[in-house]
Image (cartoon, rainbow, N blue to C red):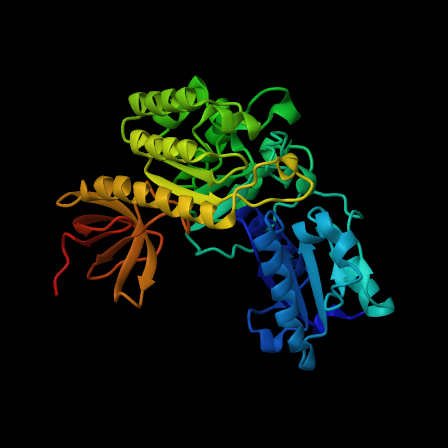
Length: 444
C-alpha cells in the first residue's frame, strides 16, 4: 500500500463554478485524511487537474494545462490525476494519447480517487472513468474568497439544446436532496453570499420529488443563520413561474438578480436550438419580472452565428438587446461540437462572421450597460467588499446586480473596509462596465 501521508497534493480546477464545487469536495476528502495540500507547484507530489470539455476551446485549455504541468515531473511531481468532464466524455480519445496523465477519473468518480491513485502507484496508469458511485458529500474546502461560495443543487441536464454537449457529458438531470444541501450550506460557515448553481436551477426537485422544489430549498437555505444572502444563476426562462417570482420578491435574503440564459431572440433560431421560448415570451417574462420586482437585475447569455443565422436575424437580436435593456450580458460565437444535432446542420456561419456579430452585440450592450450604470452617479448604493485591488489602489466590491467573475465591479475608496462586509458607497463615476466611488466617511 502506498503511504500517502508523506505526499503533498495540489489542485487546478478549470471551467465552471459547478466544476469548482466538485473540486472543493475532493479537496475536503484529501484534507479529512490528514494529507497535505498546497498551491505551490514546486512542492506538489500529486497534482489533480479538474477539467472542462463543454467547448473545443475548453478541451484545448485542459490538454494544454496537463502538458504544461507534466514538465514538473522533472522535480518532485510524481503523478498527474485528470478528473472531470474531459475524461468523462472523451476518455476513448485521450487515454492512450495523453500519456502525461497517470490517472483518469470522470465527473462522478471522485469516490474512487484513492483507489485509482493506489493502482497508478502499484501498477502504472489507471483509468477509473465510470467506476464511481457519485456518492454525495457535504464536505468542502472553499476555494473562493471566504465570504462567498457556490452550492451545486443539481447536475446533468434534460433540456437537450441542439448545440450543447452537457447531456452527453453529465447525463440526465438529477437533484441533490434538500436536507443534504442544507447541511452542506450550514457547514460552509459565515457566508455573505451563497450562489446556487446547476445546469438549470429552476428544474430543481422535479426528478427527486415529482415537482419543482426551488422555492422550498430557497426557504430552507435563507433560514440558516450563517447564510446572509442567496443568489440564483442559470434559470431557464420557461421554468420561471409565479411562485418563484413571489419568493424572490418577498424573501429579503434572496438577491434581486436572475441569470436567465435566453441564447437568442429570434423564433426560427430558437426552434433550431430546441429552446422552448420565443422573442415575445422572453420580452413578456422580462416585463413581468420588472413589474413584480422593479429593481431586479437580469443577466443573460446569447449565442452568435448559430447555423443558418442570417444578417437580418443577427440585427434582430441586436434590436432585442436594445429593447430588453438587460443589466448584464455575455455573447459567444457558436462552437460547432461533434455529437450534437447542430453539428450536422447545413449553413454553418464562417468564424470571421461570428466574431463580427459578437463584437456588434457587445457594442449594443455596452450602450445599454453604460446608461444603466450612469444612473447611479450621485447616488449611494450597498456594496459587498470583495477585497483590495492593488492595481487600482482601492477596494473593490459588487452591488446586488453583479455576480462574481462574470459581471462588473464597484471600485471604491474607504478609510478601511473588510472583505465580506457591506458598505454604503457614494458613486462618483461610471463606465460601461464598472462603477467608481467612495464611502461617505472617506477622507484623503
